[in-house]
Amino acid sequence: MENTASAFASVPDDDGTSGYRVPPHNIEAEQALLGAVLVNNEAYDRLSSFLEPRHFFDALHGRIYEASAKLITAGHLASPVTLKNFFERDEALTEIGGPQYLARLAGAATTIINVEEYGRTIYDLAIRRELIQVGVDMHTRAYDAPIDDTPAAQILDAEQALYQLAESGKYEGGFRNFYESLKGAIDMAAAAYERDGGLSGISSGLRDLDQKMGGLQPSDLIILAGRPSMGKTALATNIAFNAAKAYKAEHLTDGTVAVKDGAIVGFFSLEMSAEQLATRLLAEQSGVPSERIRRGNIHEDEFHRLVDASRELQSIPLYIDDTGGLNIATLSARARRLKRQRGLGLLVIDYLQLLSGTGKGDANRVQEVTQITTGLKALAKELNVPILALSQLSRQVEARDDKRPQLSDLRESGSIEQDADVVMFVFREEYYLQRKEPREGTPEHLTWQGEMEQLLGLAEVIIGKQRHGPTGTVRLQFQADVTRFSDHAQGDHMPEERY
Image (cartoon, rainbow, N blue to C red; front, side):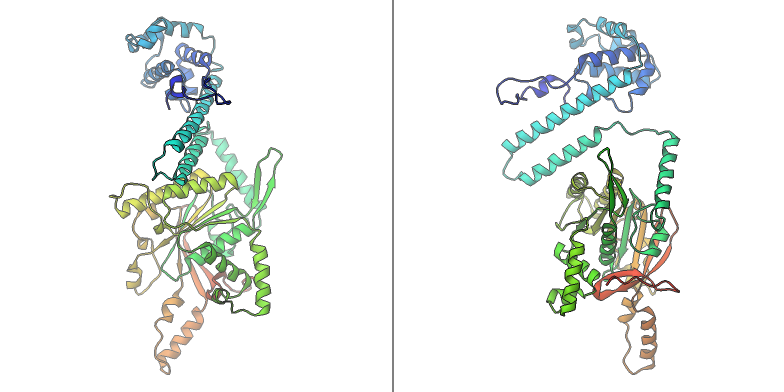
């Protein structure tokens, strides 16, 4: 962003006439701030975390602030005398009195008490000027865009620019007093204590998995990996539905919304259509196999169950984007838009390898996947929501006798393991044993049948990495015909019936 009025010389009045307005600025605040810094260099410590030279409207003031910052950070004194050598041949300074202008700035300063408030005023005005520039750029690009610059691309870029401006227009950042961090940890523990199940994160709806993880934690990148037909998408849709179904929120007097339980869920389905996902959820909730739903081969009582399930599903805050071929930048922009417009508590991506990076075409796939996982982790922190991203595993799993997946099986990049806070694997031994059926009538077949009965419907979620908790294995029940995962029946714990 340019710092002078010339950058905005083409901004017309609201009535469209040829009159022009000077963009928002406050020269007096800039002079008072610079004077305070020159009188007492400690004032700079209050400004350095958020105020930059580019935020000054007067370009000369920006250069004075920059030169002062260089001297102060190098351990030297910044004063009218020490700055004189920096500006002896500066034409802009010469026009308004030369080095004497620096002395006048310092001489007019009375106190540094208000220096931070001056800095925030200058910063806010700079953000307003940048907002004007975004509008000007949108206006100009829409008029002069070449034929291959589509309106969709222009809207996407404008949204990204506005969101980045919204994020940069905050003062937060830098070191925080430990008390603030401690208070946040206590608040999280209190929320977990009050919530059913005692979870600090969003419940997956699966008891044993929640106990192992404490729920899905904000800002975590969670990788759910597995070989084809293990049930990755089924588990992800189950978790997404459970979180959306449990969503409860309270509207506070200050206009904000406090989420008490569950989450608003965004689901990027890069492989399946929204209709296919909806069919899976209908099957899972109604107990009617998805294959029969697609063919319409259902009985009257099953049809009524479908209707009841659809009524329940249509009221949950679950939003599906089934656009194929997304890149990480577009996905991030759409996630930001969803959070801004409707709210967002959990993001699911099916699946990671179908995303593309935003780099040049000559980047290899490992570099591209690294860019994707780094981008997803940054997005999770930025939006402060857990991101559940599905991932394929390499074929080397199939070559082992024990086909339980390991971290080394993650496909295409070690950055998946590095960037993830949690890595989970879905494994169903039943799937592999089913393909080893011996010839009927043989003793081996009887042994095989016994093993199949023990493994029937049994699934394992192997937690291979967890930054905040233990690793280990969680057993679940899986009903393939309705693509439903539920708690594993053990002892006096029985899976909950939903219909």
